[in-house]
Image 1 (tube, rainbow, N blue to C red):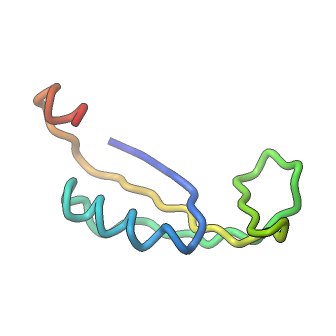
Image 2 (cartoon, one colour):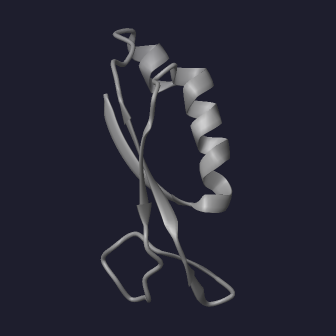
Length: 72
């Protein structure tokens, strides 16, 4: 399983904790992303109209071979 997601910093810690506990994939790959003005094709977030930096999180590991477990 390979999964990359970009999140605002204020939600990244909760996501990393959840995925480490539920999926057991460790360590995550972390890549900081600069704040970018919209419109853009790059991952972006804004708070009160001000561009915010984001954290790209990569989870690379094996997934369950049981379909129901994998989907859950």
